[in-house]
Image 1 (spheres, rainbow, N blue to C red):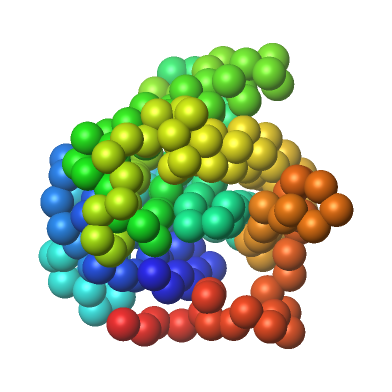
Image 2 (image 1 turned 120 degrees about the vertical axis):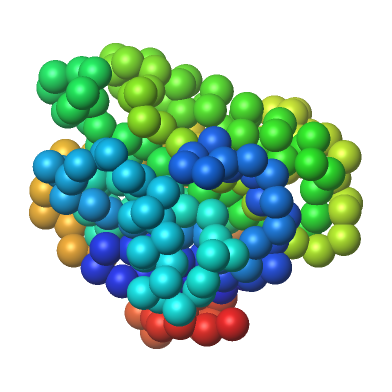
Length: 226
């Protein structure tokens, strides 16, 4: 897996088996997953055409799984917990349901899962999102929230419930990431995505990580590849 972002779009590239609740959702193989920012006043009449347009402009054809959001991409939170990487954008507005905002979550595993485990991953991510939002005193979500769960490699995980290895990591990442992403959106001052790594050094905890001068480059990268 490799990922990068433009001012308006997060692109995640790899050889994925993916399940999506978003536009043209379902379960299928794909090489590209993306989350794209549209204007707040964007018309929702033809979202499939917008997904196709963004994929075509990026040169990725129709082999994509796409999500749309009105949340600015610099508010993105990326969280890595061992073999699980989670990407979250979150925004809430004051007048639901038509202006309620969107919380989009993309979960990627570098270890393969069964299709049923991918569906469990969506369930775990959605439950953790609701738990995080209720903990903030907010509604559990918005009418346009979406989740993508994707994996690469040979199948190693038959299950992904909240106490299974993938599910435990997904839950922890979403519980950390949703409040962070929402805080960043509501601050209105962020200029680039945030990165968090789950560390076991001196106790298990999340640490903020800067991509600048990163010794682990190119686990992320700045432009198209693959």
